[in-house]
Image: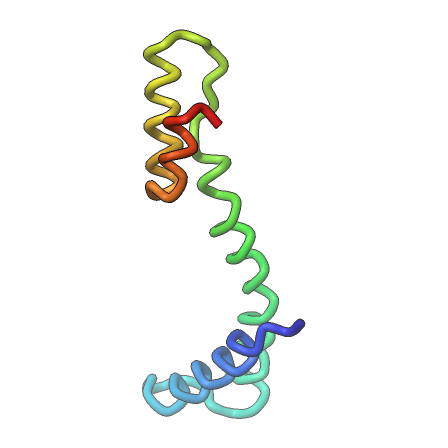
Length: 91
């Protein structure tokens, strides 16, 4: 299913910027180029926002109780407290 918010939003963003930003080329060619670049870079932004927290979070392999508590704490923070009852019950 197409992401209509991106399709329409990028076009509206370019149109508003063409009206507002002084000295910007507002012809069809440069506007179409900016629209194509926005559409091409959207998946990259989606991948970064989806997977950067997983890549940036440290992975602990030790089994000590203090590291287990800190990893549980960091997991709670990353989940935003949504599944804290599952973490406390051991699931």
